[in-house]
Image (cartoon, rainbow, N blue to C red; front, side, top):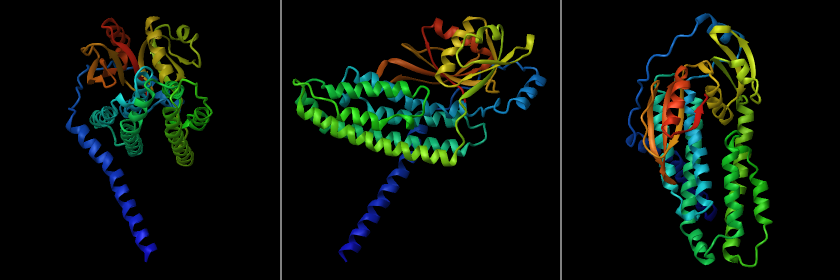
Length: 373
C-alpha cells in the first residue's frame, strides 16, 4: 500500500509538472500579445528584378530560395542570444542577483508574439513554431530558477564574500565566452562539461571567501551538468529528425560585386549577369551581418538575399529613431540590463538596405544583426 501511495504521489507530481510546463508558453504568449501591438508594414514597393534571372537562380541553385517568414521567426532565437550577451555584460561588473531575469522572460514572449503577427501573411511553419515554444519554455524555466536561486542562496553568499571571488570571475568569463560562441554556433554545441571541469578544478586564492567559492562550484557545477545532458539530448534529437542547418546564404547584388567579395573570407562569386548584377555565396549569421556595411561602403546594393526582397534587421542606439526610407518599424524597447540602450527592429526592402543602413548609422544607430532566414 505504501508503494502504491508513493506511485500515486509521483504520478500526481508528474502531472502537475507537465501542466506547469504546458502553461508556460500559453501564459507567455498571452502576456506577449497583451503587451505588444500590430507592427507597421508600409515601407514602399520593391523594384521588380528581371524574372528570367530569378527563375534561373531558383532552378540552378538548389538552396537559393529560403522561406521569407524565417527572417521573422529567427528573431526570437536571437533574442535568447542577446539575453546571454547582456547577462555576460552585466555580471562582468555587477552581481548576479541584480540581473533582471523576469524582464528577459517577458521580453522573449513579447518578441515571439510580435513575430507571429509579422509573419501571419505567410504559410504557418509548424516545425519552427514548435522549436520556438520549446526554447522559450526552456529560457523561461532557466531564468526563473536562476532568479530564485540568486536572490536567496546566491544573495546570502554575496553577503558573506563581500566581493567577487575567483569562481565569480570564472563564471563571468564563461558567460562572455558563451555569448560570443552563440554568434555562429548553436547553444547545444557549447562545451558545458569542459567548463564544469574548469570550475571544479579552480583553486581558491587565500583571500577568497570559502563559502561563496564552494557555493558557486556546487550550484554552477550542477547547472553545467544539467545543461550538458540537455544539450546532448537536443543534439541527438536533431541528428535523428532534422536535416543539417544550411550555413550558406546566396545573395544577388549590383555594383562592383566580383571585385568586392573577392577579399571576403568564405565567399565566392557564383554567377555574373553584367548590368543586372551578380550572385555570390557566403556564410550566414553574424559573419554576413558584419559583411553588409563593408559591401555597401564599396558601392554594392542588393537585389535579393536568400531569394527574398524583404528582411528584418535590428539596430542599437541611445535614443529612439525613426524608420528610414524603405523600412518599417516592428518594435523598439529599452534593453532590460542596460536601459540607456535601445534595440529597434526594422523590416526593410532588400533593395533599400544600401540607403537605409547608412541613414541609420548617420543617426548614431549601430547595426546589430540582419536576420538572414
